[in-house]
Length: 212
Image (cartoon, rainbow, N blue to C red; front, top):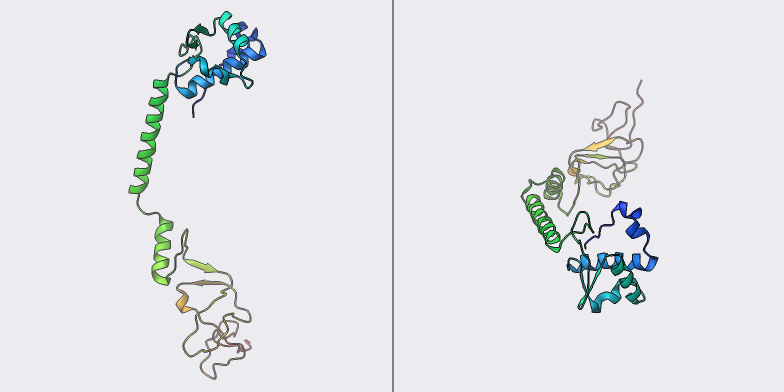
């Protein structure tokens, strides 16, 4: 895609201010068509109809010719001063191609630099998580798991245990999922087998000891 320049001073320049609306529109169309086609201000006769929606441009071309903004030729029209800083101030096709070549080169260098960059921290975390637990996790995998644990891994001697911890079991769960222990509702570890927290709650069953 190419762009055409409409310098701000044209708004108060008498050459442009005295043009009819149709002639001004045809002139803008001529700038855009020639920039897009890379003809440096040369428009063959068969394409002049593209400069206005209704295709009738003869009167506008005559007006622009009289104002010195276009020159009629046997093959069409030419816009004089195409790249002149004091004229139409447009880019030449060679300049546009140089710009496109630089852009392609810069994009190629950027893609190459991305390919040679070290693996990102997020990608390394995801790869390590997949290696340990399997699956295809992508994105930013952190070391802490917080909130409720909806799915637990029970010990071999806790068959039919619930996957949800009952009672007051809030806080953060860290480390590997293989270390999680679920509690079976109504279970009791038995005397001497409880693993109690500071509030007397057993981490393995529903038993709770009153703390003095």
